[in-house]
Image 1 (cartoon, chains in turn green, cyan):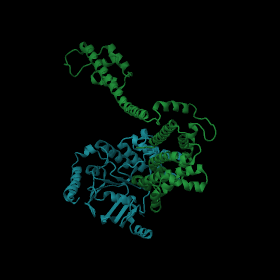
Image 2 (spheres, rainbow over the protein chains, first blue to last red):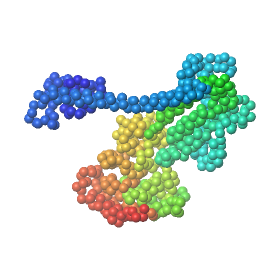
Image 3 (cartoon, chains in turn blue, orange):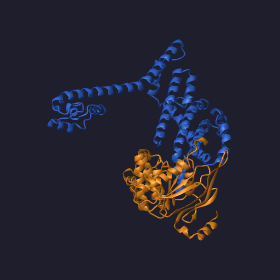
Image 4 (cartoon, one colour):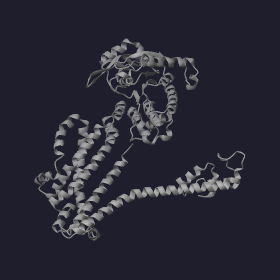
Length: 333
Length: 281
């Protein structure tokens, strides 16, 4: 901050605050320079009326500048502090986790150390898309295959579950009809559906998709239905007073009002689907991250299993964040 | 009441041509878990075309119920309601409501909120450009041209309420129903919007039924003040005609003895004769 800038502004705390709020910016610099050229006196509240302000101007300017610098520095410190507070704890947690892991791996020889896992991971991820026969493909292919199954199963579930949720939310009769069945089927472990899928489809891949479908449909049905039931009466009154057509009610009021609930259902459903896929693929085989874990267990390659766990975790985290981002886009409040 | 009976009623009463809203022997009983609750009984009221009627009473006395009945959002247990000589069978755009909490759709811009109403009322007869012009005009009327494309959460409470008024006015309703439209606003914004409302009503010649609990607001705006007795089973206790010249100026009215007389009359009704019995709650 220039001296003139501070000197040109009469009250002391104000320029200091400006300097702190927008360091590097000097929007008033031009005005300040003019004022300094004219050597205008700036009366201060704490000075006597009769005293010459000009003689004290340089002293005051210095004091004001010192204050500005102090506040700017204080703000900088505050920013660094808050940044450290957001970064440090997670880093500390991860370090502690890896430390414990290293400690355990030292006492138990079966568990690979973090360092060994890391070198193995670098090797695995250096060539993620190789293909050496149906049972030996890169981790990239395995993850993509799993994502594809989740995508298809989840997509079908959304295609059926969301309209079903709308119907259940809108019509009390349908809701009463469906709710005992939903309550009964929802807590069933996803893998219990696998034999039925195998029986019906007579193939492993559709059976895995079926398991994803049936386990991820419930959150979407339930959340959509709840969303429809909770559309504020105010909005429905608006629809009634305007005498909107059923189509307008659905597109302009129901759908936007339900969207946040629906997206929560979608997010929960994706989470469940990604949880279930590993287990389903362990049983059905083929290419996929779950199969890969099981295959590496048969090879007794524990590093790869740990890598797979991290890969599954990171992909799940990314999916979740992606949907949270989407949900934030449709948050109107 | 059947349509035929309504037609017969209209034929019997020629006065209805100037009566825009006619409420006759209306009672409202709600079914609650603890049995029937009589909210309103024996409400008789006629609102003339171009008249501004304020409904005032203590909270919970059923003011809003009366408004909802006229809006057609609820149906009366007994009695009948007519609007421009036709039975009120449900909500309709000829009776536009400005809700207490503005009730703008948060996912539509201020413009689109108004446009939704305009499109509904005039969409079948007019081209898109005309609909847009109507929307612009309605927003200009409440002084919101600059904020047209803002979302409701981006504008202040007073502006939201003005959008609500614009939405109602844009429909060119026969009757404007205001449900404590300024209740949630600060005193300065409220005064400003009251003045604006007076100008708009004067310019548009609207017929207005307004629910309020603000005595000053009622005396300032209304041609007649309808005072409701305390619920349950509330009814009209007194109707006070406000014979103050228009245009009314809130500052000049402060020195008008007639204004103070009206104000005192309403206060007397509310706080002496209908002093709220809190012990019942």
